[in-house]
Image 1: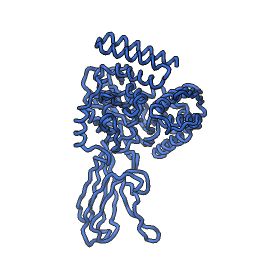
Image 2 (image 1 turned 180 degrees about the vertical axis):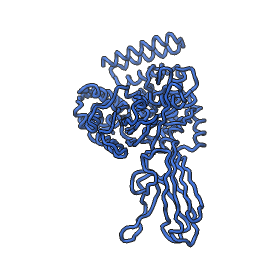
Image 3 (image 1 turned 120 degrees about the vertical axis):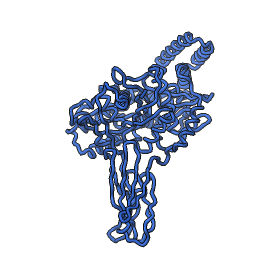
Image 4 (image 1 turned 135 degrees about the vertical axis):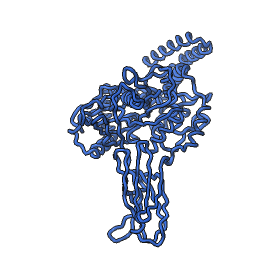
Length: 563
């Protein structure tokens, strides 16, 4: 079975294309959204999802979130007795989603289409594929999140020549794509974005403002206190998405803080973030060579797009109201399900060809000469420009710097800066040159070929001798090599993970521990409830456990409502 997965920064979802179209699967708690959070308990068991999110408050040192932002880097996080790379943490989320899909369908999941931000680099895309491999599934297709959102809205069914812009603001990333539909092809004209801009950054704005007004230093807060505060502020951010004002009540020790903020002030505080959103929007429109009036539709997706300031920004820039009738939290996952159906050649779907673009410019390092004839080194020479439709192949002629040069090192870079030192080096190719030749005699054709799977082939041919040299860049610095993937897959197999049928019990105990951390006045009552539920668990009577779990949950609902 092939599934569609939205592997998000803050939440993830899974589904498939079924008889009634795209359908999402609930997790063990009955929710479609699974928090992208991983935690390890005192016994070394891995906890994923809502229970892990609650443990971010009660056990911040044993829990981690927003690790999608670290994909493509070698960063490691210590949880329990071992270190986890971002790919491994993502694999644990994927495993949980796969278990939910298999529980819902009774079929084994073997393959997935996973959505990624349109502005994900080559290294980040390879890391996402590695996460799928570590989770035990095949990931032959990654789909850009804005393209997935377009499929969710059925924009592929629009008239030929229809152009639309998808604005995707999630928990941790922001990207925008301009797409066009013609002859059964959904073509991406341009993509732009910011991999470090999302709902979490707007939460940072609220945290900074709260602490400044309450004369608190963020660094002075313990991890538990900061977790409690950010949870209150997250609720306030959601209130501001639905109303004009929000109130934050938070207790630290014996001190009670009461803070109010309205939507207008929140928008002013967030002005720098709003300006950061404008830049990718303008870049995508420039690269697509379109004016706002030439767009047929504008679509908002991603949970953070619910903020009124987002709709205002889009309305001002494009002179119209955007579409938001598909649940913004689910749009990308639903589109990934459609893409999974297309990948499986589901006969209920009309054939749609999805094109992609190269998100970053690819080129090499060159020297240039100033007006005085002095050599200036370290310049970036683009060969494949960003937003070129893939697969793409481009060729340029280069020469050595000096006569009688015996070797040339062709360095490959990715980025948008004119100087290579500010771009990302992907690799290099050493080319021996015939000695005692002039610069012109040692000229060479350099061809870059970038395919839909993110593989870059670099080919250099000496024009005089037709001698050919080749470099295939399938790996990037910070990306796991195949041998290391196999070793880490074996290590993950040995990790103890709570069975899916026990996750409801784990989640409710994690919630109780979080409330114990947050509400000092209710600690005695919570301890009694926890002790009672532990005794019920020891009975191993499933019916009794279900009934007391329901009562426990209702009691905690009432507690939170009253406090």
